[in-house]
Image (cartoon, rainbow, N blue to C red; front, side):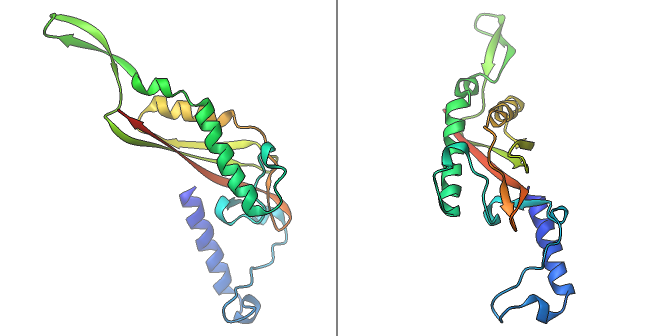
Length: 180
């Protein structure tokens, strides 16, 4: 997602400077965006700059884009709180450990070191409203699997739009928790 955004910015800024100054500037302070002739010209649009955000099924009642954005963010948080298996954090895997006191090998749960941990989930909401291209970065592979499972359970949404056309919208969902 981060790389895609950087590429989009670079490509967009390159196209702005390659055209004449008159065509690109409405005033000295306002940039006029280049005209888009087909939907194929727009690949992915970051959530922060989308003209019409994707709409979660529980956010249909909201009218403004900022209300819909806020609602979608809240619904994402609630979805993670409801579906993420927090119990798995205390025992991510079991290892065979030799206990010198008993002089026996025992299976023990292994967890993450104490502290604040983050899982970063990036995905796209496609032109039909489905969740696609899920990428996760987490401190343990089992947490990555769990984050993917949770994101796949998200409901189908009304797709985001740019220039009145449905587009894929990139979204980053950070999941934060404390290990004690």
